[in-house]
Length: 298
Image 1 (tube, helix red, strand yellow):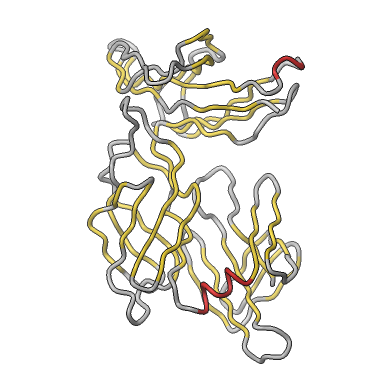
Image 2 (tube, rainbow, N blue to C red; image 1 turned 60 degrees about the horizontal axis):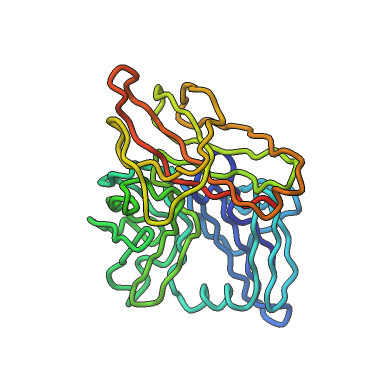
């Protein structure tokens, strides 16, 4: 089994997904398909090496090779590859497979048109596709082809009105169901690009509208309690021992922030909670809080 799966770079969602599945050396049947946020291809076979996968109509860079075994998982900073009989069986049974959401980022208010990429949306007997993000259904679902469909996002807020940030996409039809982990982020949102160890740097991505100004704070929450502030949508969840960890800075839409973690054995096992304010208007202090992002320090 040769797999290139889910490259997570600066964008969100499934940026490159390529699967080459072989029925085995005793069978002449070889099944293959490939997909990304903007393209889905099928081919009799897909070949390549550690740097690329290619077929007659598709080329994907940075592949991971995994041996065929009952369950295989390969991970790195940017990649996670899963393989095994379960994945092959799901494809062979014509159950749907969902890759991700185009763009992968939207407003916490919802109502935005998105395109979902995958396979098996119009197989015989598939019926109506039902989709949800974090349990909230997408509306206006329209199947464009066997590999794409469009829909409108739901609102994505927690009980305090703050965005949910990264959520899973679930798709179900009459032939089965499929999930894409961390396929979409409701914003403005903070997302950890690394999980830090003691003494390492923490790299955090802030996704907010270009032109807003932001400030990130660290502290602790009080379970079940948040404080509305000024004209900002949502509420402050980081309350205990709150400290600003960045100055006010402009957002380019995707702003990456590096926060050093002190080398202190006493921090191991501690969870640092980050939250940002994304301010649209400095005079009126209007805007929105982001999600609260818990960071366990190892």
